[in-house]
Image (cartoon, rainbow, N blue to C red):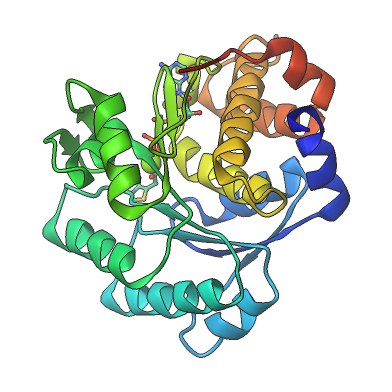
Length: 264
Ligand SMILES: Nc1ncnc2c1ncn2[C@@H]1O[C@H](COP(=O)(O)OP(=O)(O)OP(=O)(O)O)[C@@H](O)[C@H]1O
Ligand SMILES: Cc1ncsc1CCO
Ligand SMILES: [Mg+2]
């Protein structure tokens, strides 16, 4: 079943409604297209409920949040819950400011989230296990990040995904470690945001959000490895362009051959 998930995604072309930041909004739209899904960015309070009613997944990314945007996120999220549309939360910079931490908690309390995807500092801080973040950049997370992720997953009954050199995905019971990926992915801004869009794309076609998230992380990591190894790449600019190409050129066979995942 897992092997075919990318195929199903490309056949169904899920519509992924984003309420996201102004830094990487265009990259998120293009990565969603490159994986085979359909993006739409819609933020206005007056239209989010209508838009999400037609969507297959909803991304809430707080990277450049305002109070009004958080209000739109909660409105869209509640509507998504009514329409049984999965909601994927990227708590960008949670812990860096009170607004970010408090808004994330407000969203988690008002909306049934399917997946929280963050870096190790964001997840550790939300789990109440400390962690340091500088702007949107993780400096350090909890000593036992797997336990912190599991605690957060159990506290909100969600899938929690932590990106890093080794990615960790857990639903509170199952846990997966994904070792695909490449350090070059950290040289451009927004790889985390784009990964969230790809997670949402997979969740739009698979109701087991744990499996969908694991598959998304594997696919994203493999594309990063292939781009980093490409002879076209001379630095961050050409890496970014090549990465989009590699996401688009992925096949279920490549994923099956190159995946590095361990389950516990
Ligand atoms: N050192 C590394 N080795 C392998 N893969 C990495 C490494 N650093 C990041 N990645 C990969 O890059 C992607 C983004 O993860 P990262 O933790 O850098 O996100 P982020 O901090 O939220 O990014 P941003 O804030 O720029 O959006 C993930 O797929 C992750 O596996
Ligand atoms: C740099 C930056 N600042 C707010 S959002 C964002 C994009 C990466 O998360
Ligand atoms: Mg991030």
